[in-house]
Length: 177
Image (cartoon, rainbow, N blue to C red):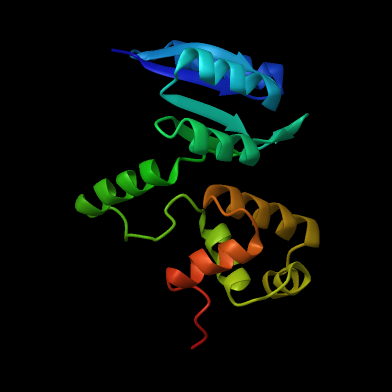
């Protein structure tokens, strides 16, 4: 049985390249492609995919909003929101991290889907720092920090900064020593 996948990205060359690469894999069946948030509902409702790969930025809406709609109305579909690099559904990321830990390759992290830099950003967000303060602390531009914060929120499925702080603090982040 094949894994049924829908690819959603407003950049046709990227979408086509990703879909073509996936089609070459055994056990993967691309059942639809979309370039807007509006096209996703029809594709998901009519095709019952196993996985939906989403771009974070769509011309008519946010991939995060589409992700929330899928989670609410089609909870069996695995969603992945892409923001310029590979992003895994948190459950899939945890499973991969657990497997790697069993093999002794990595130390378990509460947010294995985050890069080292994104973990640093999340730590400072959890401490209550705003973007300009984070930029000063890490010697980054405000725009770079804003992009990292946006990516972190997407990857940990936080609707806003406050929710990210709660999730991070529950996982031990933001504890001043």
